[in-house]
Image 1 (cartoon, rainbow, N blue to C red):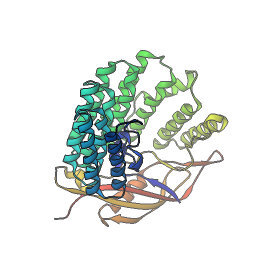
Image 2 (image 1 turned 135 degrees about the vertical axis):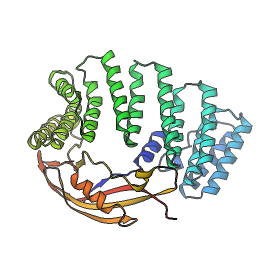
Image 3 (image 1 turned 135 degrees about the horizontal axis):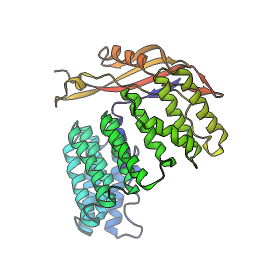
Image 4 (image 1 turned 90 degrees about the horizontal axis):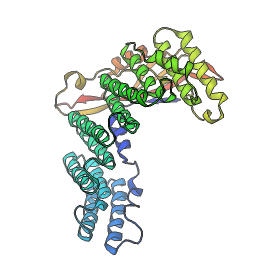
Amino acid sequence: MQSLSLTAVGLLLWLSSSAGWPQDQSATFTATLADGASADDAKARALFELGAVQADLNELDTAERTFLRGIEHLTEAHSEFSPLLLDPYRGLAQVYVQSGRYAEALTVLEQAQHISQRNYGLFNVEQTVILDEMSAVYTAAGDTRNAQEIQRKRLNIGLRRYGEDNLELVPYRYHLAEYYELSRMHARARAQYEDVIEIQESQLDRYSGDLLKPLRELVRLDILSGDSSSARHHLLEILTRGTEIAAVERARSLAVLGDWALTNGQLEIGLSRYREADAVLVTDVDSQTVKLFSIPTLINFIPPPSPVDWTGGSKPYQWGTISAELEISAQGRARNVRIVAAIPPGLMDADYKRRLMESYFRPRLVAGEPAATPHVRFTHQFRYFQPD
């Protein structure tokens, strides 16, 4: 059975990934201190490694005490502002997050940021990983306003370090755009991609292959919003006139053009684009590991609004889960959608079934031709208010 797993808490998972919080923390702090360190440093390192293992085992109170002991050793051996404390504070913050103690997590992350700025400068780029962790904590706590503000501060660091027109700023704008997309703020994401294009066009040729990625993102947003912009035409223009375009970039761009055609009722054009993209990958040795068409891909699914989405506010909420089984036709449409599990049951079943039936999928290709996929499982999470 093919599994399409989409999650409304993907934003938090993405932020945690961006921040560098691994699923297995036991190896996180092995390189915190250099070999040949003092006895106090070595003892602190051993404590941090032990604390990470304890956190993995969900022994959170014990892990907290272990991290604090290690931090105390380092502080006494060096100072309260030693950069050696950066990773330990981040590890302690993750213990607090696992415990649901978000205020404490933010406190130690703010201390880590202060240490980073004191040692490396107010706008040092190394602190961005700490900002991502702070944003993740705010998101987990349901404070999306401060989570967004932290992400904007992250971009501001890049602006202060590199300037508005420097290509080094592009990854910062991509990062913020991805955050906005996962937060369903498509207009703000669009603005970031447009800024990327403006930077690249000021530094590169109009037909540079580097422009393909932000243009693809704009076409995707056009698909989701039902709008039309010049991005698709610019994308086609580069594919026609551009030189030195990597096969993978050409294939990905053709696939997105196929997505646009499919969702706009141009079935044959869409399928033709998919065949063309697949042929590019098949004929390029370096691209054969890229799997654009191995499983169906959601193109324009927009989760139905939950009760929390409708009303907003700060009332406590919980995460619910819904799973469906369905078929995907060779034309990219869902068939025989069945809700097979839901927590809580019945709350969002009909809404999700309807949205899946309305959505388009990029079909998988078999031997270069669109093929149906008979067994697909879809999983998603949504917010609902805690019962009184």
